[in-house]
Image 1: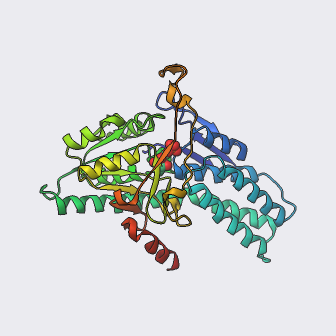
Image 2: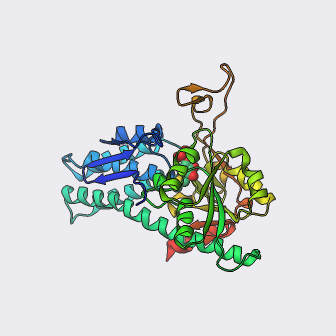
Image 3: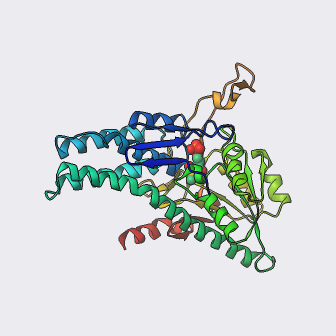
Length: 362
Ligand SMILES: CSC[C@@H](O)[C@@H](O)C(=O)COP(=O)(O)O
């Protein structure tokens, strides 16, 4: 069974505290929007899809016991609290897209004269809860599309015998812990394993917060996949030495031209992959794609506290007094990306905008 980062039943939400992993596996209760904002901001829960799901479910647990005098007051509360949740972390777009969709729903339900405030609340709760199932289904589809694309590319470009397994590299954590389950880039790895085609997966440590060493490694060991941890500074040497067939990473926000914000270090892996002619894939649900911005320059990059760089846990590793620059994400230019793997197929960055608009129209 894969790890469960989010436990929800109507009126109750718990998250696996990712600050304590892998040493301690402990769930913490999220009793409403204030708790939701805090666990996202402190990174007790992280990963773009999980941020959006926990944010929205924190609103669901908050409004569940409340009585609303009118549909208008429910709508007002929903709008204010969604805006607040969006402010918890700025780079991942999933929470903003979820908030916009829920607000459209709240507006439609307010106008619908056939339903009362009780029915409006029920429908709103159901829509929020549907995110959990949809995310897992989307991730499974991403896994299937991504594994197929990687295997096809290997068959076309290498002399490897048909049916041979592949070695892949991933960065940060994009697995069950970062989503409702299965994972995005790690879902592709999972699918390769399910097909019997995963020869080996390498995961980076992912400094400074160590999502790779703490969380991805934890998931890979849990799944008993053939896996090896490398430091971020080893990627060039790894690609030179270990016959890696593809890099697959997640995304926090993909701009309309395919430029992709993801965990700091992703950009330099893409540069190194280009140099070694290793295909570089971004795996992301449509809820991570922001067609409203033309390119990566428009993405706000979150800067995190110096302490994440200067300390490991309580232990200081950097010289006291040194200045730090700690951007949590970087933007990989579209030109370095071979394909963007979504639940609806794999797209070249240049095709992305048109393909998604077509999907949305149909
Ligand atoms: C499916 S998770 C995709 C991204 O959110 C992931 O690659 C990432 O960069 C996570 O950053 P984090 O700072 O841990 O939230």
